[in-house]
Amino acid sequence: MHNVCTFADEQTETGKQNEYVIKSVNHTILLLLLRNKSFRQVSKQYHINYNCLNTLLSCYVYCSCVKDVFSINSIVSFTGYYNHKLTKVYIDQLIINRLITLAGANKYRITEQGRQAVQTIQDNYNNVLYQFCNKYDIVL
Image 1 (cartoon, rainbow, N blue to C red):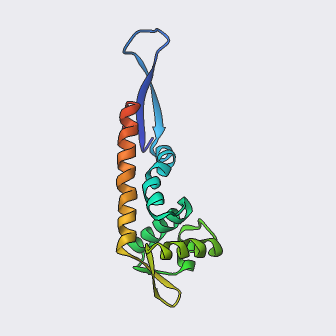
Image 2: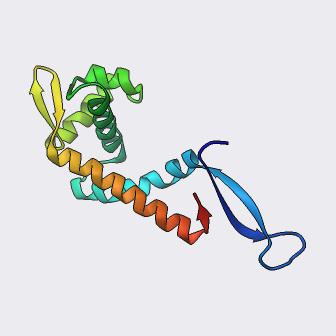
Image 3: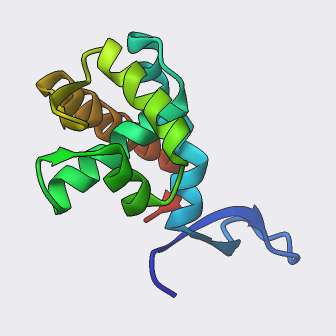
């Protein structure tokens, strides 16, 4: 199985110390479990919800993979996560918070502040994952 970590936190039925049942957890499950914790700092800093942060991350990935400027339609098509109306609402919030800027008629660009917010999310996730794995003796 790919992307699996193991951890030992239960003694076996024999009751002997230092004998553990090895459990497997897919990394994707850990990502989903811990992502909200990694969003928390940026969400509080900019007073935006996690949907806005999902949209920012979608824009960041789009800009990294496709091109530097994007439209709402391109983000909706690229991620398939929100519809046009919701994406527009989230983009407007990101503009208000200076994480995204208008780059032309219906075109947008991530600002340096937006890139820093994404980096903070990545750093926070790495920290949260490290702490979680240490707390529960998970070996990645």
